[in-house]
Structure formats: structure tokens, C-alpha cells
Image (cartoon, rainbow over all chains, first blue to last red; front, side, top):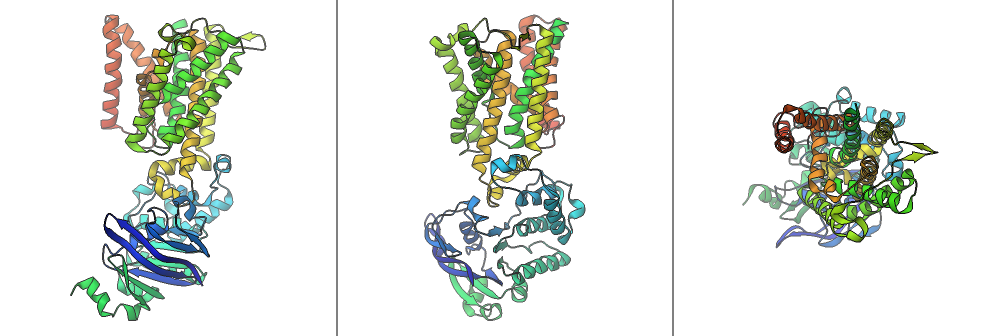
Length: 243
Length: 288
């Protein structure tokens, strides 16, 4: 079942089409990889879907609802969560608070009178233990190593009970053990019925994890299908390596 | 002794101003240079109500706070669209406008002549007319504002303010309408600054527009930068140091006009040294 679709989605920067009439669908219970060389529009696509960039044409369909305009603050309510290509944590606040932030109430009136509950704390403990950061819970996020920050960002994203998860290069800069942890999280989300979208340059990881693959080049879709088939196609090899 | 009570009362007033501004600058990361404007609105609203209607001080103070809150709601709606340098510039513009209104709306404010004979607080027949009693009132209000600030920052709301300071766009993606959070804390901060203004007007029993210029906003900013951003204790400590140390210059034997100039040099020097050696301030945890 498609949880999210894009219909002729466009994003332009001046005369350059960063996202060029893309028709993609992201299904429940599947990991869909978005691959393509640098500048092919993968991150721009995620930023457009999650409201950080405006839509210049086409639309997004989430749960059957057609959207031509998305605000960042709407995204969580649509059941979408994400990580960022360059880690964007709340650096000067604690590791624990980075997680509690996405667990507590959103409206101002409730948030003003809310102190985090034992239930919030338990949820934060579970997710931080999963990524091995519970011991660091009182440290400011900015003192973590790059890999740990990446893990914390992933932990923050999966703390929201979303239906669609965007992971923008989650494995970049991670050690082998960390890669295993993140792979397990992605597979767990897939098995729970979520649509997982993975932007990744490591083709071995894409082959091992993804059920479906979209290849982008210069904002256009140039191939789609099962990773092991798609990644052999001449046009895909050419996009990565040149003629 | 009366001089010490005077200094302590000033520390309380600037402590309240520091705590109020810290909510916007320290906790939320919005560089506001408008605080003296709201301070002035609170002072003038209270003074005018006391002089012309004879209403009770606490009622006048509450109405002054409401007026400052309503004005902050409008100004904040504009300000919430901005961040960084633009936020600072627009807020500074607001302070300039408030000062100009206080100076030039002579039929209401009496312009540079100011408003004299402002009455002192009274409740259930009990008057805070002596310096020591007024200090007690100022201390109670300082404690109240401290508790309000602590309540806000220890809530989920406070945690969101910290996240806005770190990365507003990133926290928005997790479902927070950050514009409303910025607006809410700006209004709360303005109301608390107006409370300090009411206290100031009633303490000195005379106000004039020059106490509410941009330079006063910068002084309040210096209070929280010195004490430490995002630290309530720091805001009070900053007020203590910046009120007491320049006063001490009076006793150095320098001619009074030079001592006054030295106070400005002292403020400037302390800010430069802090930025160089302790950018988070004396008790602060966070950097700008």
C-alpha cells in the first residue's frame, strides 16, 4: 500500500530543475532506496516533501490527501519523520532532551504546564539504549562523536510513531558496529509496516537493505525497480561513472 | 544605609529586567533590543494611571503589563518572521519608536518634562512608602519573576525554546509551530519588563523618556550576557555586578563627569573581556 506519492513534483532553483516532474511512490513495509550521484536531487526531494523547500509544481499525496503546499510543522502530523544529510541536533542541550523534545506535547498551552513523565523517560531510555547512548544522556549533544551524533539523530527520528521515515545518508561516517545497529533499526521499521526511504551511496548496503530503488540524475528519474537489477543498468552506471 | 537600600532596589529592578530578557535572548536565542521599550510602556502606563485615575498601584501595574503584552503581541507577530541580525534590528527599531512616542506625545506623557508625583504602592491600607518597605516589595516581585522564569524553562515549553535557539527549522519538522512559541515568550517577556517599569516609576515617583532609550536595552542585554545566558541566577548576578561596580566608581575620587564616562567604559570593557574569555557569561551554560 502506498503511504506517500509524488505526482509531477517539481523544485527549481533559478533555471535549474533540482526535482524534475518526479512520480514516485513509497510503500508500507518496504525500504525504498533513493540513489544517484551528488546533485541528483535526492536531498532536495526530501526537503521538498518535508516542507523545508516550497513545491514549485506537482503535488504530494499522503494517505490519500493531495498537498500542493507543506509547512515543516505539518510534517509530523502527516506521519512523516526524517534525519538530515548534515546532522542537525540541538547541540547545546542534553542527549536525553534531544529525545524528550519529540515525545512531549506540541501545543503551547499544554507544553507550558507539562513536565516529562515517567512514560516519556521510559520511551527515551528504550530508544537511547537501542543506539547505545543511554550512558551519555546527560551530556550535551555537541560533545558526542560524529557517529554518535548520527545515531542520536536516528534515535530522535524513530522516537516519533510515524508511518514514513526518511533517512538521508544515515550510514555516512559510521563504524561497522554502528552500521549494524542502524540497519537493524531500518529493518525493524519495515517489519512494523512503515515506509522507509533511504538515501545512500553505498551500493552494497542498498542491495542488502532495499526492496525497491529509484535512481535520480539531475532531478530526473532514470531508473526504478529491484536494486540488484537497477544498479546494473547502463544508464545508472553512466550516471555514476560518466560515459 | 539608605544608599545601600537604593542600590539593592535597583538590583531588584534590573534583576527582573534581566530575567525577562533572558527568556527571549538566553533561552530562545532571539537577540531582542526592545526590552527598554516595554519597560517604558509599563512605567508610563502605571504612572499615568496612578496620577490621573488614582487607581491602586497593583491594578495599574497589572494594566501596564496587559498593555505591554498586547503591544508585544503585535510587534512580536512582525518580529517572529525574522531571526538573527534582522530580529535585532527590527526590535531596536521598536525601542526607538517607543522612545520617540514617549518624548513627543506631550499631551499624554509631558515629553521631556516627564511625569512627577507618582504615588507609591499601597495594599489594604499598608503603604510601601519607606525605602526598606519598598525594597521588600521589590524583592518579593523579583522572587516571583524568578519563579515564573524557572517554571517556564523547566517545562516542555522551555525545552522547545532551547531547541528553537539551536535549530528552529529542525524542531519545526517535528511538529512544532515555532512562530507561536517565539511570539508567546516575547509577550511573556514584555509583560515582565513592564512589571519592572511599574516598580521603577513608583520607586522614583518621577519618570522621563530618557530612561527608556536603546542604550537601556543594551544595558539590560549586558546584564544577562555578563551573568550568563539561559541562567536565572546569572541574570540576577549580572544585575548585581552591573549596578554595584559602576556605583563604586563614585568613591574613587574621580570628578563626577569623568566617573560617569568611566561607567560606560566599564560596561564596554566587561563585554569585550567576556566575549574573549567567557562567552557564556559568569553562570551561563549556553553561547549566543
